[in-house]
Length: 223
Ligand code: DC
Image (cartoon, rainbow, N blue to C red):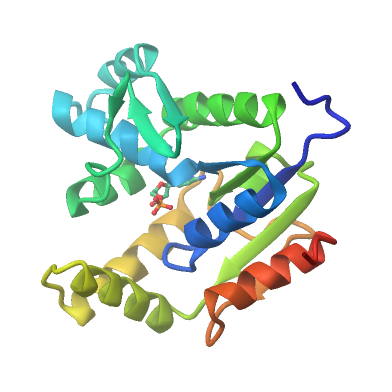
């Protein structure tokens, strides 16, 4: 096990569609750390709420009870919810909307932030999300804030959806991103914001390789 002196925590925050997950995964590979997709953890809770028919807005006791017997971890990059691999189930529009909603509730954040801190205490991690540099690891060794214009992020999301064989409407994708940006940045608990000293990378017009190289060079890893 790593000691605190040789483990590294890398925080990569930013709005949805900024390319965080692809970049964070590759940076983790490059430095030999675990990649933790914290958005996937909120999505897993959202999936369980939907399955169990618990609406956090009207049933806070039900939410607390559900969280008390919820286990989320990552096994070989897959998201495990109570032992079940839910990786492919947590990307639907319903789960996306519920993940954004449920992330505003204190019991959800307390539970997931607690799990995330444990993961980062145990070993080196590259964690992406909205509040990693501001709240989960304010003392992270490296902090980055990745962003891109709303239109660029909507174009990327639209391309992802149509390339995967789905049907998508660019205008709807753009409106959904704007709504999520607003909700993520305006909730009272740990809203999306750039952490102090986080290095800002605007990925408009940048390729993934360029972003990864930039991050690794900031970290002094130029291989
Ligand atoms: O990154 P994502 O789209 O998979 O995240 C899903 C939702 O989870 C997002 O709308 C906001 C929430 N989230 C959060 O509140 N805090 C994080 N650290 C990560 C995600």
